[in-house]
Image (tube, rainbow, N blue to C red; front, side, top):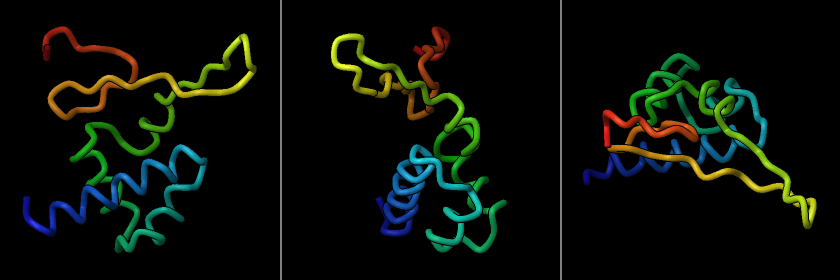
Length: 92
């Protein structure tokens, strides 16, 4: 994997953490060094298959009835494409 691709993936992982914590896309764009929000959104969609807002919206949170703690529901990935909590049977 070329260094540029590795760096881009690292930036997307950092963006995912920020999106999950509720930080705005504009702030993430600036924090990660993208020239514009549109370039960040395009790269995120290219690598993840969804826009940052779709990623944030698909993230589901469930509370444990025993402990009351909050945990994320695992996300399914098929062929490197983020699919939220659903599996695309055609892709499997």
